[in-house]
Length: 258
Image (cartoon, rainbow, N blue to C red; front, side):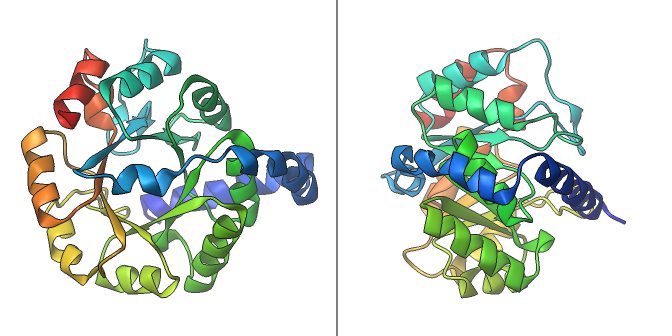
C-alpha cells in the first residue's frame, strides 16, 4: 500500500465517523448560507502574470514536520500582505496536521479566495468545505474513479465552488478534461513514491486546451522558476513548504510575487 492509498483509506474512515455526528442533510443546511459569500477563486488565478497560491502546511509525509512555533494567523496574514492571489489551507489531519478549524480561521482572517486542500473522496466533504469557508476544493484524479471524480466535480460546481482537479500524467489529464474541468493542477510529485519531477508540468502543458487555467504544484520555490512557468503558459503556482520554512514569510511571498 503506497502513501496515497493509506491516506485515502484513513480519510474514508474519518468521513464515516463525521457522518455519524452530523448527517449530510444537516451539513447541507449549515453550508447553504455560505454560497452567498463565495469568492472568485478562478478569477484570482486568471489575472495577468503568474498568480501565487500560498499554502499553510504544518507537515507532510515526505518532509515530516515543516515548521512549528508560528500561528496560522501569522502565516495567513503574511501571505496576504506579501501579495498572494489565493490561499491553500491543508485540512487533512493525520499526515499533514491540518483541520477544518484551520479553514474556518483562515476565512475569518483573510479576504483572499481559499482552497480546501485535502483528499476529497465523498460529497460530504464538498459540503464541509463550503460550510467551513472554502471557495474551492481539490480533487485528485489518482484518488478517485472517473465516476467519483465527475460526481464530486458536478456537486462542487452546483454549489458554486471551484474545483481544482489534480493530475500527474497524460491519462489522468484526459480523465480530468472529460469532466469539463476548467482548473487543472499538474502535480510534479508522485503521490505513490512522493518523488518530485519538475519536468512533468512542461511535458503535460501542451496537452491542456486553451482556456483551461493551469496550476503548477510541487517543486518550485524561486522567482526564476516562476518566470519560466509563466513563459510556458502556466497561470498559477502553488507553493507551501518553501514558504513555510522561510524565516520571513511576507518577504518570501514578495520575492515570488514581485
